[in-house]
Amino acid sequence: METSSSPKRTFRTVVGILLLVIAGILGFIGIVLAVNRPPSGKAIAATLTALPSPTPTFTSTPTPVPTLAGVSDALLVCQREAGRAMDARNMVGAVNISEDHLFLMKWVSLDWQVDALDDALAGVIMGFDVALEVWKKGCAVYDRVQIEVYDRRGERQAHQFSVHAQMDDLLNWRAGELNDTDLIARLKVAQVE
Image (cartoon, rainbow, N blue to C red):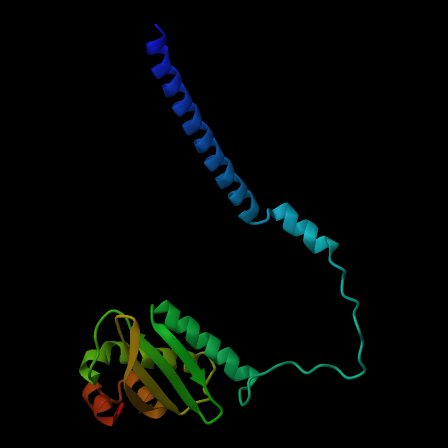
């Protein structure tokens, strides 16, 4: 009978050792997780309240409001309106209205590939509509519109070309005094070298 209990003891010993090893590994993982766990919201709040509060210092000269060089508050408001108009049309890009009376839109075509004006004409027309909408909302501070067309191909954006228009031509076009063909003929397209 002793021979049969020896394998049982060996089996129990092996199982016991395996259980101890597993318990040790789980305990080690628990310790690593506990040490690397981000602080809770209560711990962050306690740390912030424990920090000394800054003592305000008063100077005799007021600090000027930060502004962008060459950009007035009115132009910034107009740029915000242009951003809203682009968003309403699901356009991706940015607008800068500068003191030299230029409405510059950088438009990224995400939906289709653009290599020439014909490919991008729908997006360029939407860009012109953005410029006209902002103009009609009281931002009549530019007389030229430039749309830089970017094509999103894979992970990069390629600047394909720029389209230049005079604001007078766009106003006449939307008023029906200039047809689509005549407007396109007046556009200046500059290819990127």
